[in-house]
Amino acid sequence: MLRSPDSDVSRAGARLASLAALHHPTAADLADEAMHGDASQRCGVAEVAAANIAHAEHRAWCEPRLVQLCHDHDANVRRQVASCFRRLAQAPLEDYEALIVAFCDSPAYQEDSFAILHVLEASVRRLPGITCLVCEKFLTRFSDEAKDIRTHRAGDIHMVVTLLFRTYHQHQRDQWAPRCLDHIDRMCLEGIQDVAKGLEEFER
Image 1 (spheres, helix red, strand yellow):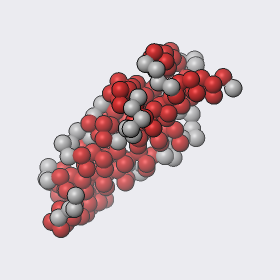
Image 2 (cartoon, rainbow, N blue to C red):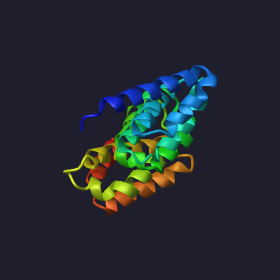
Image 3 (cartoon, rainbow, N blue to C red):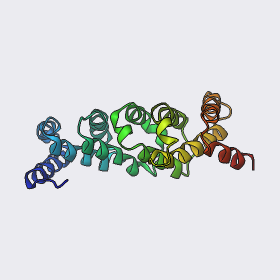
Image 4 (cartoon, rainbow, N blue to C red):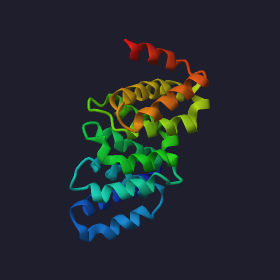
């Protein structure tokens, strides 16, 4: 669907207000107005918050706005929130546990579960234990969809399997290991075929 010129102007204005608020606290009121404006304005705020979440000096401004906008009733706003995880590819993800939990509990996870799963799968760091919770939320909300190869969730399930085995391997001495095994057992019982491949790879 094409956006109207007015919505583009509103979004651009909200971006400018948000950028101003990042650097000048006196501009906070303008950004707050955009947060309570129309969908295009909220999308502009989400865009700036997502783009700057990895910067330590801006995190205190960005994170609460992303958490709030996770629950926005507009799908485009929620998708923009999900894009924040692409900015965290090089970050220690355990530092963003509160944001990850809020995202997985929100409608934004429904919109774009791939975003967080992909950044976890691509991470070269030791996975945080919270990865198990991300996978748990996926299985609770999308396991039926994941069994249907016509849906994009069927592609995501491979990442879930990989992440659960990897998290189990890296957390065998803490509380996350038994939770990972519970979810692996659950997937076996539900007949999710990727689990067998995961077992083969894990046993090599």
